[in-house]
Amino acid sequence: MYANILDGRKISQEIRKNIMDEVHKLKLNYGITPGLSVIIVGDDEASHVYVSMKEKACKMVGFHSEVYKLPKETTQDQLIKLIDGLNHNDKIHGILVQLPLPEGIDENLINSHILPSKDVDGFHAINTGNLLLGEESFIPCTPRGIIELIKRTGEDITGKHAVVVGRSNIVGKPVGVLLLRENMTVTICHSKTKNIEEHLRMADVIVAAAGIPELIKGNMIKKDAIVIDAGTRKVGDKLVGDVEFKEASKVASWITPVPGGVGPMTIAMLLENTLKAAKKKCE
Ligand SMILES: Nc1nc(=O)c2c([nH]1)NC[C@@H]1CN(c3ccc(C(=O)N[C@@H](CCC(=O)O)C(=O)O)cc3)C=[N+]21
Image 1 (cartoon, helix red, strand yellow):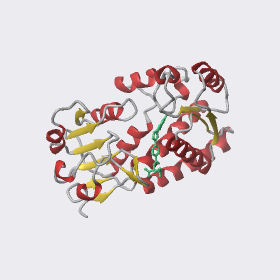
Image 2: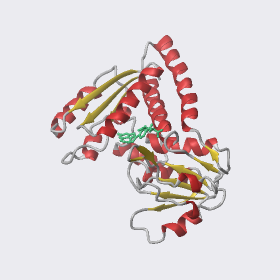
Image 3: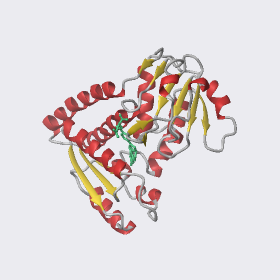
Image 4: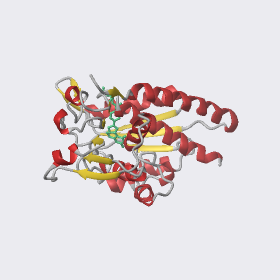
């Protein structure tokens, strides 16, 4: 094993500890307890696991947490009514609708009903637009977590080449914008890219967000690259990333494990975004 491990579990614990202290101060000085509502529709097993992890994380840092578990037959109108109520609820500072939503529900439409100031996922068009413009906004949790991990390497990435694999609205696109903000040269590859391997071999930083288990092999990675793996898929009873970890860790300088890398950071950033939303109340 050559690479250094970017331990997302450990880093997220540090972040959570800081959040706990901040929550304590917020309660003491302003009587505010940060509140997060998570809405989940349908019975996708993995989604329910993620949502209970979020709920647990909220409780651990002293947030008020509400989870709305709705049946898969829930209509768009019912969802919008629930969101409207939460928009007006002073106890709730952050609202998150777990994705993916069942077929027939328009995710962008649903997200557009969340008040931008409570949109802790950063998926509302206003936050997405402000991110692109470089204005103050809520930044999506996984991309934020990825940048945080890259910063923790201590390496200077200015002017270096980042290759993102995946162009989703949740990870690929926003992380591309954030890497650009860090002054990297950014290539975004996707399922239609003709020569992914060629791009990958030039990368100083690889962000894998394709959702294809072990798509990226060790021989596609430049020596001493930083490799961030945002893929998580269950293969049998094992959680597998987009990177073939064993081979990749022989060439990369830094690498994230799956599990224990990007996943825990996503949740830590959700807590940070919710804390930020609550703090806005004391300005
Ligand atoms: N509106 C919305 N916001 C999201 O942030 C969102 C979403 N929808 N839909 C699904 C994805 C996925 N996601 C993860 C969060 C934590 C882990 C995580 O902590 N994973 C653990 C392992 C978990 C396990 O054991 O299954 C790890 O990587 O160590 C993974 C995935 C948030 N997402």
